Length: 320
Ligand SMILES: [Zn+2]
Image (cartoon, rainbow, N blue to C red; front, side):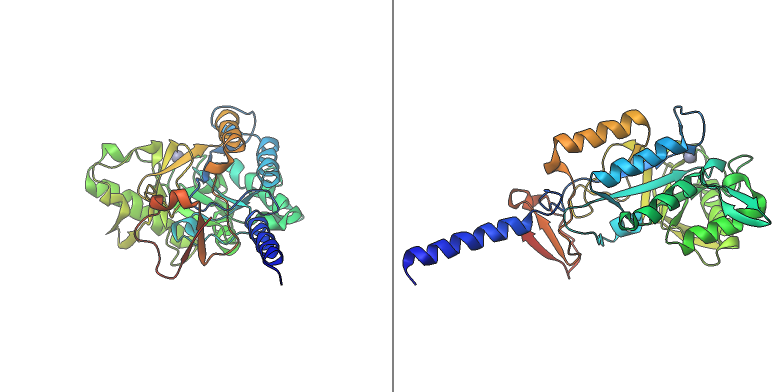
């Protein structure tokens, strides 16, 4: 073959490689980009500061799906095991306070069915229509709160609900026993609040250990280690992450700036979610975009020094 022929083939191969690195969504992989951990409170009527209506929650899911976001559990982020198709972006849903509208059963002909107007009902219906959206989300429940936030406020169904969540692949997180402001209490109370919440969860789901805690009011205890691990009330707890109530998009779990003890969240209200959705439309290069292979981490070459030093041994770094 002539030199010209060889260089033509070489150029074609380069073009093919470039095309392969850009996915169907048109976004090049960037596993050092940022991702959204969304924070929902009430799913109910009317829409207000801490309430998203079921219709607006549904619209959030539709928008996220259409823009290439896919659900992953917080555990997948913490473990750096984000198994998504190339070109898609992970998003984590979190639900705080176990308010009644997040998960409600209706009894029809003697059989409990999930209320389609409750958060879990909306989510399950959407996932049935769009199975490739994923099924994931973490519920930071309050097992010992007064009404109406005690485990979604249906005592006769609370065990059924927690078991449903865990069996379907959702996560249950610690949010303390009754939403204690952890900054106000001594060590023993902080530990009791956390351990007892876990004891209550385990009454319904034996041996279940929440992997993360969302801080009530976003307030840290005087010593952060009290919230991370310990034992009280005959139960040992260990959390791999502490979630704040604000702070914007989270760093990639592969980035140096990723700090599992201070994980920022985005409040899923019209203004804040809208801000971040349009932020990533305007700045697609800032967004975490999967390369489709959980065994590799694809990063822009210029960002290589943003990688954390303690990456898992078995992953391969690809620069683009
Ligand atoms: Zn809360």
